[in-house]
Image 1 (spheres, helix red, strand yellow):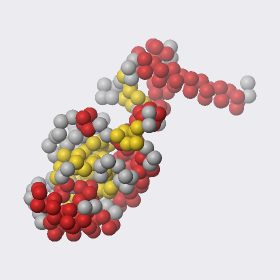
Image 2 (cartoon, helix red, strand yellow; image 1 turned 45 degrees about the vertical axis):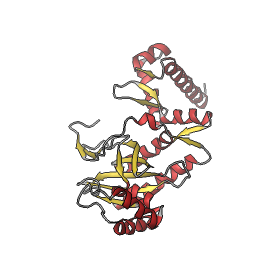
Image 3 (cartoon, helix red, strand yellow; image 1 turned 90 degrees about the vertical axis):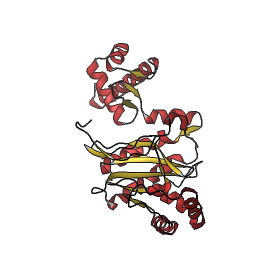
Image 4 (spheres, one colour; image 1 turned 120 degrees about the vertical axis):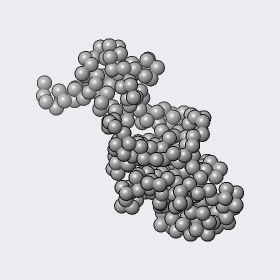
Length: 279
């Protein structure tokens, strides 16, 4: 058999085997071990592992903390498109993972809810010392980079009303505590296209944030969080590119966000957390 025909046959065989593995995963309720998937499909465990690893690299498959396989964000996104509705978190995850890998720091997706930002998704850094934000946790708008941009959209009168409602509680000595200072910072941030959190929510933590531009039911933003000594404004072009990619993926779709899936509201705690072992 000519080499090009043999290569084509082998590539088709890989697709058939991937299809068999995906079917087996669906039959197992979307969560299964390598041993089960190999047994159901009749593939050697080493072969199944290689195919699943390639699928994982392409966001078709993912593994949980116990090493079991589940459907990845790309397949979840395709399924939602079929039904005409797309989840904001599923759409953003692959891009957030890309940005995380570029900067090696934690990336957060947040929305505005009332006078707070709510962290709805994250791509966590694997570094031993990192900023780790809990999905579902909240923070006052004026203490976060993304929150200041959200406030800037309301203009000076909106920021004054926010200050009167909330009293601008100080989380650290760096928190902006007057409406005038908050407006100056927020306005300048909106003009340049990104905002900074300079240890305003937690001592030792710095963030860079940008807004998503696609019209959604909520103001939404993307941010990079890092120990303040590691934060770099040179990340801004990458952050803006990630936001642009997410905006592109959102266009023309009906976007949903299941707030109930985020769990009970959690207190704000972005403290850098040391890890003894890398994942």
